[in-house]
Length: 358
Image (cartoon, rainbow, N blue to C red; front, side, top):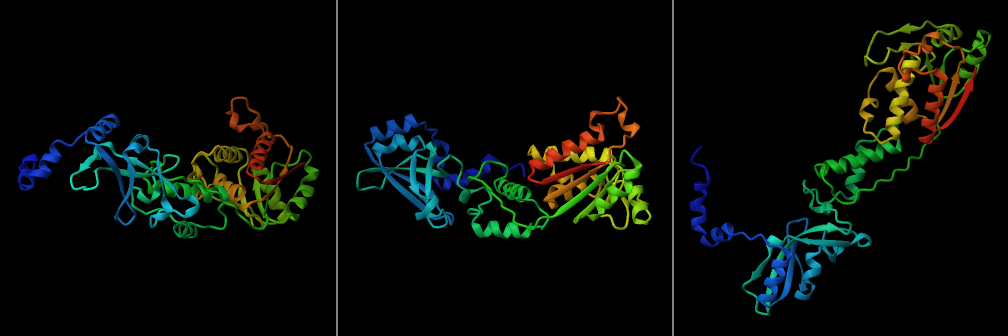
């Protein structure tokens, strides 16, 4: 293997002397160098060469008087005239010449002609998608539809779908800027309610009243908190069945109760849901932290962020002395404050919110 070094290429270059000479003295031209050479050699025309998405050479001819404009990346052409490039309503493309590719062609008989090899860009300077790194030849309408359908889930929000499409476009270009990528998603669906109860009423006499109103509401039911879940268990006459599955060490395990869709711990879990919601609104890519996980906070986030259009909170005002400890982190703040902050967060997501206190 040691013999396959630079010397191993010499027979190839020796067989093609002209190519070897060109290779060894490959020029590094500046725009000023090109302008001087064009003037000194009385070049009349410049061929701006590029390839279409099938690899066929295409060319835009300009006069030498337009060369300065070309070297400023200001030469535009109609992309809709090139097969596979763009539709007519979005046809403007720009040619970005590679100065090092400048050559004066020796075979022209109509005045001296030079060539420049160009990259194709959109008018805002982004590389054209049709020449992306994966040579996907542009992500056309049919491609996007196929991708969206393959990744569709009825519970996905419009924001999640849009982010998923943008992420795929970013992947196609290996994380570097590609063509313009603006995604707008409108999700049309029937309204869906989710009801969440947390904390016992300030007056235990109102336990039945709160449960009557909670279970009378249409939609999914979430019960948060140990005391609250025991009240719901007595109201329904069904046993509360704890689970010991810790899907996340920071979130207490969930329980099961017939007639309730989800039973979780209270303040710790809601604190985590609030943090997930704030990150979601801030555009942080944390969806992987909750969209498919099975801990209580993630399951609540899936129902509130993705599924629900209308959310009803039933909040008991009874004070749990354990949550008033000043040594606890601020995220373990008072239950009512947590719910109020979560409600504001959900309103920013476009949800209809109603909070009832007991």
